[in-house]
Amino acid sequence: MKRFLKAALLFTMALMLLSACSASVKEEQNGAKDAVSEGLKSGIKKANEQNEDIEYYLPFGYEVKEEEPNNIILKNGSKTYILFYNQHENPDSKVVYNATIKQSEFNYNETFEENGSFAFLLVKNTDDNMHELTVGVGGVKMTTQVKTKNLSAEAAAMIEMVRSVKMK
Image (cartoon, rainbow, N blue to C red):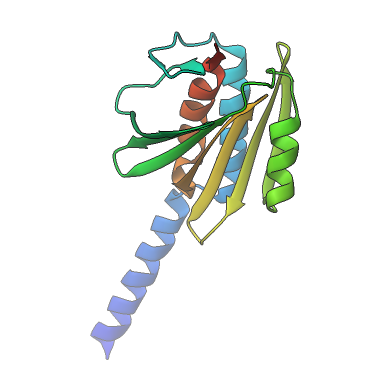
């Protein structure tokens, strides 16, 4: 019986320590907000990919899986991203944002106006540890599924790519 109690106590302590180390959803959402804000203030990456409508930047490790009108499906390892663009909208447009928030309810919704651009960050909780993350600027948005602990890092990479989109 004493062994069982010791094992239960050790398990409980380990669980508490592990949960204390992981970032909370609120902390990661705030980190994602900061990442998008900083990404809007930094320089725009030079395009290294293009299709008939747009030019855009893809970081190392990302690849184009499929292209459809106004959508590019990207992969980075096991993660899938959807890059949507409306070539008729400018960086200060709110059309894509308004259409996106009408489609679904989001747990976190933050907008930014910086350097003549309208940007947004949307997070929808899909599971205990998974979220749908959408980052957009004007007529361009990118969406993926991400774990809580990766919200801010993914938002930073996504704003970099979204900001780089240039209409032809």
